[in-house]
Image 1 (cartoon, helix red, strand yellow):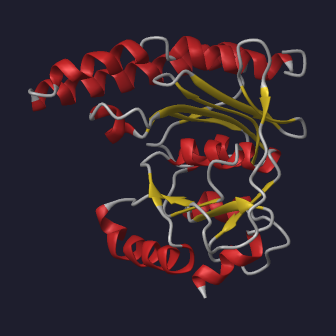
Image 2 (image 1 turned 45 degrees about the horizontal axis):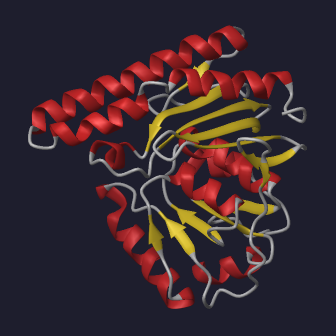
Length: 266
């Protein structure tokens, strides 16, 4: 792990230490499926435990940096953006599509990011200017976005969002299917972006994401050679992270598809 800076090494360690109980909790959820109240309480306790663990461990690394959770509003340009269990509904139902997501934001942009899925023992990490990787036993796999050039046949992931924007999400999904014929709804934007960085998806389009859910994944995509932008962004030659973080409407893709993804919104 010589190419990991001490800072990123520490963040990866903090994420794994904080989430050490998640694999056990996930396994125990099967025993609670027949008790709605018990299931909800169990999930609530798991989430809060991971959140507190992350705050403790990350506070030791950078005590000067505030920690932002999905329940907070962005304040300032330097902070840790954490999602203790991204894909919480999946986790609650025994679906392995969930992750712990942590990003260090400086000057309004992610500089370090970690996405960890304990159910599959997958760890993705990136540091600004140093590439994106998936952790391996002996060596780490360098992540590269796919080389797909056409929307027709491309595999695009998305999230459904909340009831409040269900009509908007339905229109987006219909447009994606019309252009590509393929659509995946995983319910975990952090993993969607990690898989996009690794070439498993060709693009990821989703609405109303919180910065804590997508910041680490955005850095993975950028460092793997992909492009990120806001859905309403007209100039595709530049990225506007401020806009993406503000409204949460994200369009991420491999570099070849970046201009063609805009066709979906026309």
